[in-house]
Image (spheres, rainbow, N blue to C red):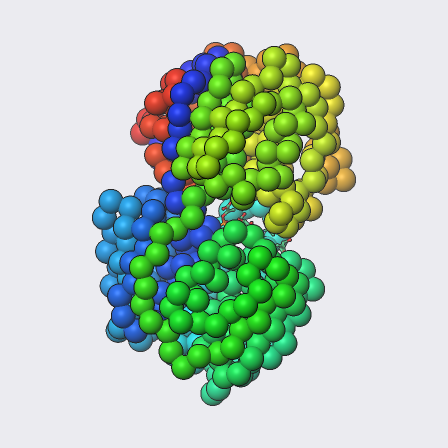
Length: 417
Ligand SMILES: CC(=O)N[C@H]1[C@@H](OP(=O)(O)OP(=O)(O)OC[C@H]2O[C@@H](n3ccc(=O)[nH]c3=O)[C@H](O)[C@@H]2O)O[C@H](CO)[C@@H](O)[C@@H]1O
Ligand SMILES: C=C(OP(=O)(O)O)C(=O)O
């Protein structure tokens, strides 16, 4: 197992580069199963989750090759409609193969998904959408079995906004017969990116960027080549690293339009921001102001940046309240941050963060992907040395994070234990 040794009290300065978005690439890889040829995706990050999904697609019968950020997926021979527990338990995004397998092979057997320990993560909305489109769903031995003689367009109403369920429903509806309407669809950039990919393949989806999507089913989809969008969560993590620093940091290769709520909260905390076409420079405040925060579906503040923003608030000049409404139990990082002498209490699923003058290094444990990123940020500004164990979580979603941060002044060493 590997861990990070982080030397604290470091000042960051310079330009840091954002990779392609994991949460857009994973559904895109699954969507490639809908064609009967070779698609190519560019700007694909080198991440554990991407490797896990590649492995899963290979089991299903696709040929997947990856080199220098470009991935080719040849789905000609897709024939095995099963996603086994060993892989699915490692990554929630494996549930994204359910829709394409059902649409393409009219059957799928997928283990209930795993993923980060951030509270209960049901998939009832995914399954209800499949049923609405004509699938028969049954569950046995921890597996979801989906079967359909014919998939037919229909109206799907989501009682909750769900990124995953919206994407899975889209991937079935594009090949279903007739018209589907999805109401209360999620509007995250990763949903838009999936719509762009599917439409490029020949799907007919209207309503991108709104909560109502209209899909006219087509007979078949064709393979495509597409560039993946930048990772807004990685960008947001680096912006917060800049806000915690003493000198300006430029986050390059990012899409500021995807970060509106995050930029607003950074401004409220006292940061100055210089926004260019594909780069944002954050000029940190002399003293960090406390900011209250609620996570919400896009365009609200993302749950995936809640832990990192909590680190910023742990050093603010006052008290702030942080509530995660998407995953109300996503607070595993709090106990670890308190080990670094932050002063945070959880009451009724709200974190009350009382800013402290400084954090102090300690041994901490990464519990999930974004919590690990938060601990790295905290370790970089804490006094002394911080050791973060179980960093395999961070490798799921941040490409070469220590190399990127070290290039702008951090001192993080990866060590095998
Ligand atoms: C809206 C939102 O912020 N979505 C985030 C969510 O996506 P992910 O797709 O994992 O989660 P959803 O968007 O589906 O979940 C949104 C909410 O709906 C609930 N739900 C979801 C599916 C379902 O079948 N039934 C159900 O009740 C979830 O428990 C959650 O409270 O986690 C990802 C990883 O952290 C993030 O990248 C996404 O941006
Ligand atoms: C929690 C995350 O990933 P997953 O949904 O795969 O668990 C994430 O991207 O922050």
